[in-house]
Length: 426
Image 1 (cartoon, rainbow, N blue to C red):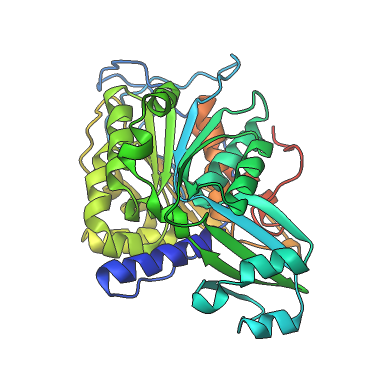
Image 2: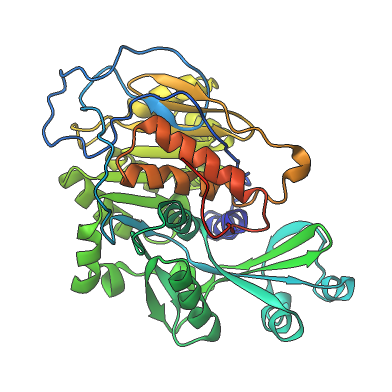
């Protein structure tokens, strides 16, 4: 439930900056036709920038990530991998939350002064809510949080082998919800390694359902307590980082452990691996710009939606509101690893997704009847998860976009960031 994570992080930004950040709206994406070669695979070791692998820039349009890169044509076309993936090839690090969903009645909402359809951060008066909803209702649990959702979706799209996706984050030590979260991560077939501490309990997000409405109450708690020296630096954990070929971190984590992000990002850059980052919310650009810009030189793939892209462009004084121009300017920012051109992928909800690689192109999302849309909260996470599933298999970029659109289209038809047993994607 990334939108509540957004709000929770937003509160953190307010505590640190004493300002109220702009709320993020998670976009949904859907399918995108038109095959184009994506040169995303492991861009062969030392490709010379002058090597031509793609046709000249052609204009396509609008947001959501796709292919566009500066003028240099460094990469060789991506080979479609038929070899079986190895475990721990995809790495994610972020804020883990246990999503708790249950049908409640109006009296329950009134007791905790909740609106039927809302998203809030837990306050002192909500402390008992999480235990009460578990005791009095039939609940469903899911491993949540923006990055963990995306790793989970990528694993679902890949199916076999299990544990292609690794996830690091912080939870409470020996607490009930932490135990359930570990179990749910295991059921999702991701290889979750949590830093367990005693200072705060495991982060949770309660979805209080009444009819077609969902009132979300989130408490980040332990998710904000991740420590590089206590977890990421441990030899057995760093070995898992080194095994990965593709890395993904949502921008929310910039508010938690910048030093952890930089260590992973530098490793990816030094070893010509793919490092992916999500803008995640306008307030990240607005109130954590310094942290963001410290990481940006290492970013190979940048995700965002149109609202986040606009905030990013404003903070960096791009002097344009055109989504394609924003993508091009973001792509041209300083980059450490010159062997890879940066990819920018910007979604626009039901409107075309824009991708900048060797050119800027736009891709239409999959059509869906509005009456079939149940919940768009996890759409952005699902889009990224679908895209990552293509990247880690070294698929052409256009296939990555198609996978992203498919995953988002599936998730918005269901409550929460949940999915059927197997995908039906070709």
